[in-house]
Structure formats: structure tokens, C-alpha cells
Length: 373
Image 1 (cartoon, rainbow, N blue to C red):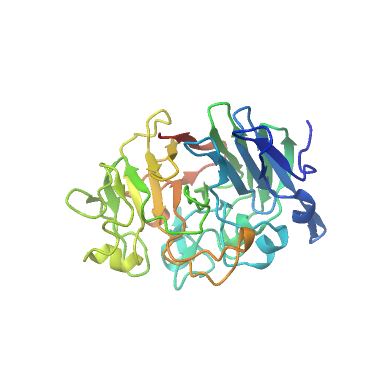
Image 2: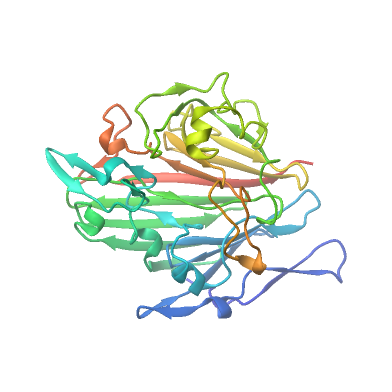
């Protein structure tokens, strides 16, 4: 397999032969050593000119260059152009694989077979995204890399962050000829545990985070969502979206109802909720679709997961500069995290997140890019 972390620049030609557009982040400027391990940048590309860059710190998506209606590529991922920033600016989850448990666990604890496990309280009284030393903070091994796919692996030891079982995880990123970024998660455990893996990519299909995402048109294939309490922990109810600002069964601009007089929007400071997908775990059925009218860029999401967390960037505050010095502002990016529901270990009525020894955990998320002319 050929490692592509040494690629410094990729150039694509659009319109006329004399016009060259820079595509990609310099791997030389990105790479550095962290805790005795080498942080690297890996570049995927397809024959359509789509480019995706990944790093082994947090097994992250760093950039993704997708064409607009005129065929011009632009980065649609919010994040940093420096490996050091991903390490040193610890409050972000930009583009990272989240584990062991994506989203929140109420009171930072859960029980399995009568044994209670106490987790880190890193989100008020609750546990969020695997804790402060979750998978986003760790340097993953690189099992293989080519110009079309990268496979990362990690061993999470028994009781890491309070979770039982030694868990072996692999995450495979594949960029297909159909402009799909396919993310597959594989895991096994030697002890009964809970697991809920996802990716925390932040998207802005218009301009990579320079302006608001409020004009993006959102479609979510879901008739229900899971309302939350003041700590953003699901109440256990499945609430119908019909007649509420949470109904995206008809494509609607993200900003159209985000300031509506709705208690759930007030609790989340906007959209930060889990939708119950109608897809019945069928990866062939469209789960979500986002259209950015000005550029014509389209993002479709497919998954075998029962839920999807739509987060509208309500806590992005513009204090820290990202790629090209952009200070990402309020609601300048959105996330669509395919997942089991938040707090499922404490909600037996929700789909189970238990993984037993001998089980083969598998989750898949496909981000497919297209254009609408």
C-alpha cells in the first residue's frame, strides 16, 4: 500500500488550462510528533477530482473538497490545517471518530448486569463523547492506506474512561467513484460493554465555515425525535415531529424555525437533538439530505444506525481561528452524526447498545456528495 501522507499539494484544473486551483492541505506543515508518535496526514482522491484528507489523531476527517454546480472544488469541512491545533485545542471534536460512546450518558454512569460503571463527568453532571481522553484525543494506528481508503485501528483497554472490556476498534474510510465518503466501524470486546461510535464532522457546503449554515435546506427522514431535559439527556419519550420546528420531512432552511418559540429549541440553544430515522437500519434508504442553494452542493447521508444527531453549531463562538485563519462563527457549520440514541445505556426502551464477547460490532455511515444545478 502506498502512503499518501507525503503529498504536499494537489492541483486540479478547471475551466481553462491556465487556471490552477490549490486543493488540499500541506502534509509537511501538518505533521509532527506527539507523545512519541507521528501525526500524519493521508489524502484520498477519486477520478472526479474529489479529495478527502484524514489524520491519525482522532482518526479525523480534516478536509473534503467537493465540486459546486460549476465544477469548482472547495473544502466543505470545518477544522484546522495543523496537527498541533487538533492536539492543543482540546475543546473541539472537529471531524473525529467519537468513542467509546458518541453523545451523552446521563449522570455519567450506567449499569450492566447489576454492576454500576462510573464515567467521567465532562459535560456538567453528564458524560459526553467518551470523556476528555476519548477516541478523538488518541493517536490511532494506520493499518493500511492507499489513494482510495485508509484503515485506522485502536485498542481501548478495560476500564478506560470507566468503560468495561478491552475493545479492539477499526475504522475504514473509503472514497468511492460515486463521490461517497464511506465510513465503516468494526469492533470486538472481551467483556460485556456499551459502544456507540460515530463521526463528528462539521460541514458548511457553501464556503467551509465563513458564513452561516442557516440557508442550507435540510431533509431528515424521521417522524420522531427524542426530546431532552435541561442537560440535553433524552427524557425517554419519542415525540412526533409533525407540526413542530423539528419536522424536516419537507426540505426546509435550517434557519427558518430555529428561533421559534419552542421549549426544545430553547433547551438546545437551537438544534442539538437526535432524530429517530424511518430507515429501519437499511443503509440503502436515504436518511438525510442537505442542499446549499447558492453553490448547488448536496450532501446525502446513509446509515444502518437507528438515529442521527443534527447539531446546528449553536456553541461555535468565533474565538478560535481554523483553516485559512477563518474564525468560525455562531451556526457556521452543522453535524449529522449517525448513531444509536443518547443515554441508551440508561434507557432500556431505546435500541440496545450492548456488545457482548463474540459479537462483531458494525456501523456504517455514507456521506455522498452531489450537485443540484
